[in-house]
Image (tube, rainbow, N blue to C red; front, side):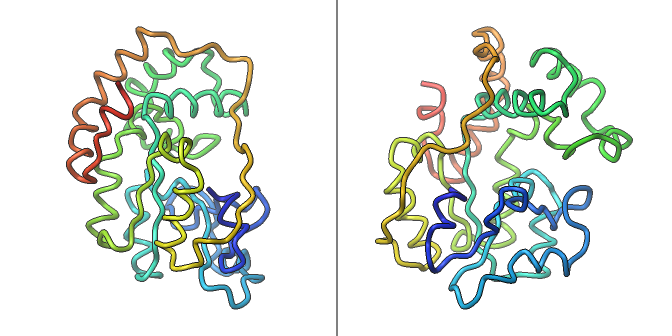
Length: 236
């Protein structure tokens, strides 16, 4: 979505992937200097909308409150993927980029629950973003989405289901442009982006089924919150 929105002449987003997710509004990760953060948007000019793509803002509990203090009129695009697929994809990315040293996803899930979750020392002393090590827990979307709806209201939050986005890219981009109040008829160039690392096996059926069971309650609550049949979309 970042690749597509940055094509629009009325939208400015940092063009370099290194600055795609500055994560300024997080307590333990990302840009620390406000002026350096603002410099990312120096070339925005008179565009109608200016934004960035920090996925950290969803899982960081403090982020919506920090953003509210600085940019109360901000609009948010939240894209949610099947949490089981997202958890394994995140593990593969972390392992491939050598942030994660544990050799299997299943072992990493075990360590998440037994030595990483609620571990203040690990939270402050790791090689990446803390919640990226919480492969299961960072996929508990209900409370994360609820924070934004409570603090900013539904009119400022646009929720996209990743699997629907893949099936109807142009329609999803159109609806997103309507939400952002920019011309939805702009002729976007559509191409494949963000392919995951290769060389990893598919997720085993026992691990998938176990995770689906663990996510069931959270997804059921999320269905009611955003009025979407997510269990059918993700687990059918």
